[in-house]
Length: 420
Length: 162
Image (cartoon, rainbow over all chains, first blue to last red; front, top):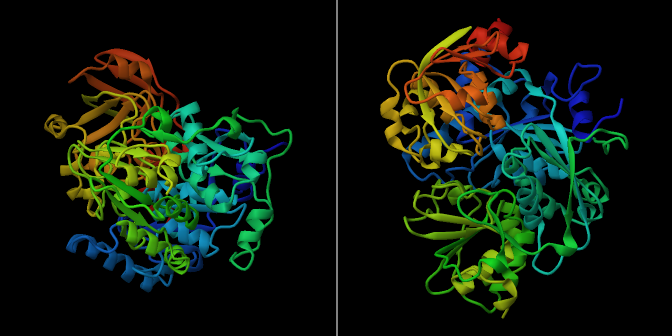
């Protein structure tokens, strides 16, 4: 029987002898993750299930990242609960200042390996597909059961094969690839399906760029967005991986739900306009729109690659007097790397707020919320109404070059126009 | 299982969990305290329609975006017994079943229902009745019916760990 990459992973983590799209199976988890928002709700449900201990404390990771550092006493209480529970259970725990955004630190610290199953109480767990894992987001009650029993129920998804061809042009990044996919299939086009990224254009992407692509698979409704492991994956995991792994690929005769192509030779910098991640335009078609705040960061686009792209624009430039800008390295490791490279100095000099790693304003949790009537341009993954604060604010999504350029110009511009 | 209630219609495609329960209120971890924030980013007045047992009627790709279980937790705490829609986003869909509030995929029933319509769902047969008119919903997998019969994933798991 021929299987896709996702089907192979699910089959290997179930008791089934064979599977077909649509089958409902129990899937074993290699890693279960939650945060200060999803964790406490899950702990409550786990207690109600009558479970007192996690299935395997080495396979559980808890991260304080959403309202971190705590914005108020209630949020501080959630983080206290997360910490006390984690210490009592003896699981991996990342406290304030010791990790960063969950998905980035799990990748950095080797919890995610190709062929593994990672579930997280956060929809952007699909980011782990960048390393060839079946990473998928679940709600807190699912996470409670996964913590207790190490498994979750799952319908076998179909796979949409995305072939990336050609070479990236100037100021085009991983972000633009996934925005192009969203333009092609829309925000529900991937429902009950996995996106699998292949082809020379996919192989040419760095791990950081793959994170940006996989991160927004859920914005198409997909369960995960997966890159088959290759030499780049192996090199990244060298000295990092916490468990042995074997590369897995789709069989040549595997059956795909559908196929589409992203042609890098023709791809321009793209932007998701308010209030839907699938509302895609070319940046060059919407220039001149005033921007009040730029936000560079989040689980998929707060990498050192994003920070270097932003620094390219900010070097010798200043944030426009009518605009404000925040830059959020995704992890302590990225923060220190940026510091060592002198990037933080460039940002501070240019007039940006340099933030500690946090989910923060990406989900409207604090640290840069928007007022009514304001417009933001961000490298984040969602621009729903009210996502970053006021329901009367607008959010635009684009890559780090485009975001940094908008901060300098105070409006949407092509990055080439502001290079100092 | 037979479920019924008066329809509360929330129209529009791709209604996301951010507008259904804005991020600023995610620091609430007690389900009973989540209900006052349901629909806060969409139209808080919808909450006034949630009197007695109700059925939420929705359109395409309802519940997209964040995995925040605060939305179905608030739905359950508000007396909504099930959600009937054209299609659902995947995490919201499974969260609903996990909490014992079935999400029923039935475009025709969704289209037929109006504010206050009497909606009845037979989860075993998949027949949805709207003001006496019958429609056939997408079948529900046997495992999910078992879970519903138990009351949700918590209760199903408790039986398992016992």
